Image (cartoon, rainbow, N blue to C red):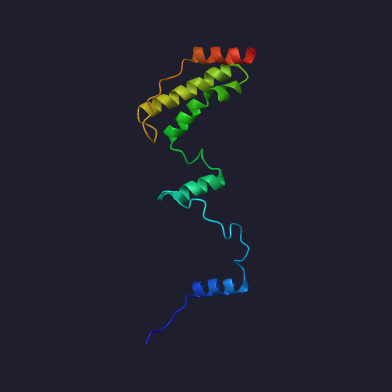
Length: 129
């Protein structure tokens, strides 16, 4: 003779369903957002990052460095003096050196160092226009 067992959790879920606590939840009756897409093992990480807006702390240092290099123009345009721009470029070049030497975690970075004079020249030109 087969016996039926309902765990405490199953009982709580069943009771909540019977009381209608799951009725009218957001997204009820709608397909899942990733329905029909290829399965990704790290779906929960991507979903968490999207929900929390977390990107900076989640990137490996070398990828964060690449992003910082891509955003160079916007970053230095917020600086108020040539000395600040040069200091920022020196710090960025030091991080690039560490990344090329393999001292930072993440994928390899082969970005060349920045020429501080060229960066300052572009900074000055954008400030005058």
